[in-house]
Image (cartoon, rainbow, N blue to C red; front, side):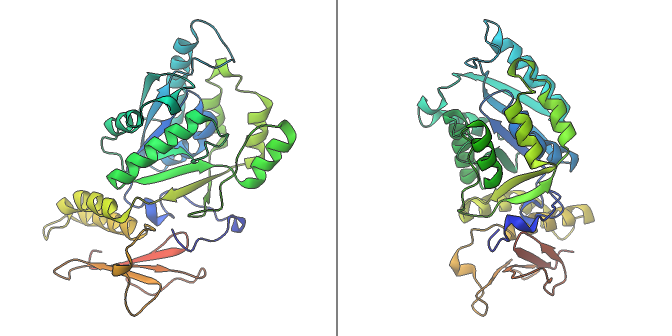
Length: 331
C-alpha cells in the first residue's frame, strides 16, 4: 500500500471491495489482550468485516481480572460471559479466552505469546490487532499486537492495525488527560472505512462490569462518528509468497472452474497489492511498476503506483490505496 493518499481525503472504503490488499481474505483472527478490547476497540472493524462476508474468530489472552472497575472475586467469570455475549453481537464465529495474567503479558517469556497466537491461526488470512502503540500505550495491548504481528509476518499474512486519528487522540488527551495515541506517521498511511457504530455500541453494552457508558469511550465514539482507521500491513515478501503459493496452487490448473479461477484472481490481486516487493521484481522499463508472471506465461500480474485517481489501462484493474494491480490471463 505504498504511495498512499492522506487521511484528509476522507476516502470511504468497503473493507473487501475497495482494498486490493484484502482481496482473497476470507478469514481473520482478531487478537486482543482483554475482554472488551474486541468491542470498545476493534468492534467497528470486526463488525464491518463480518458484514462483508469474512469469517472472524477471536483470541482474547486474559480474563481482565485485574480491572479496578467492577472488581470482585467473580470478575474473571463475569467478564468471560460478557466477552461471549459481545462476540455474538458482532457476528464473531468463535471466541477463545486464555487465562494469562492480566497486566503481565509483557513479562512472559518472549516465545510464549507468539506460540499461543500461532496455535489459533488455523485458516486465517489476516490478523486484526490494535496498532503497535496499543492505542493507549497499555503494555498488554502492545504485547498482544506485537505477538500477533510477528506471527502474521512469519506466516505471510496481512496485519490489520486499528488506531485513532491524531486529532481524535489529541482531543481525548486534552479533555480527559487520557493517554491516547494517534497513528504514527510511519509506514503505510491508515485508511478510513465506514462502520456500523450502533452495532458496535450494542456489543459494548454487553460489558456491564466495565462501565460501557463511560464518558471517555462515548466521547471517542462521537469524535470518530461512523468512521474508523485501519492500517493494512503486508508480511515480508518471502513469507507472503509462500502463503500465496499454498493457497493458489490448488486453483491454478487448466480444468479449474470459474469459481476457482475467480478465487485465484482475488489471491493474485491481494498478493500484488502488498507493499513489500524485492527490487529484483521491478520492471526494468518502469520505476513504478512491479511484475510477476508464471513460468508458462499463462498469466501476468502487475502492481503499479498511482499519482491520482485516474485508472490505468489493463484487462482487469483493481484499485488499491495508492496502487493498482492488473491481472491478465485468469479472467
